[in-house]
Image 1 (cartoon, rainbow, N blue to C red):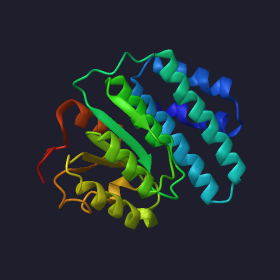
Image 2 (spheres, rainbow, N blue to C red):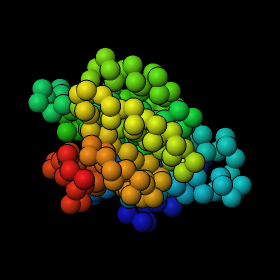
Image 3 (cartoon, rainbow, N blue to C red):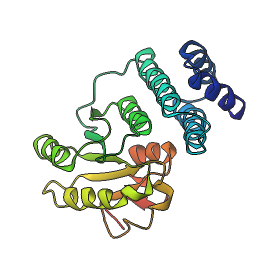
Image 4 (cartoon, one colour):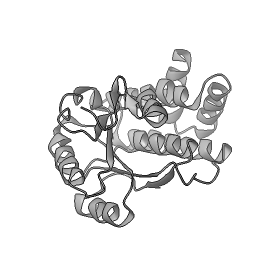
Length: 219
């Protein structure tokens, strides 16, 4: 997969959605969707973020790349139309914490839940706690997925988790994003919170109710 990443990064920064889409289609013929998301799209976008941090590209360049990747993820879902949600799979609500503008990872998680035929509500990035709280109280999802890319938003994530952990219906809370590997010990005291380091963790949780050796409902 490594040979695809450099080319894909080049295409999305150039806004060449046709070439980027063809490359993804080629990868999809050889790999699973999770592998394409995890080993192609994610490292390419991390590369874009690094180039921006190093002032080698502009904010406009980053936004262009994001728009191209957004379109490709949507296109993949349309090429592989999901069947109706199964009644016994549950409901999942996805959103980024307030001021968190990164959302592609969250959209990929939404796509995978749809593949498993969950009932999905994807609310996108930058969602104030009060709005997400209202939606969650009304809809009562079985799972709430939060996305955070930047370490200094950790206090916001903790506030969201504390709030949702008090819900009477006790949803499972999944946390993912670029800083997820640094958060694994932060939420160890919560029985209903799982930190997803990657989409492999997500697939494992959906299929088995655990991440690594940690089962849902246990510390």
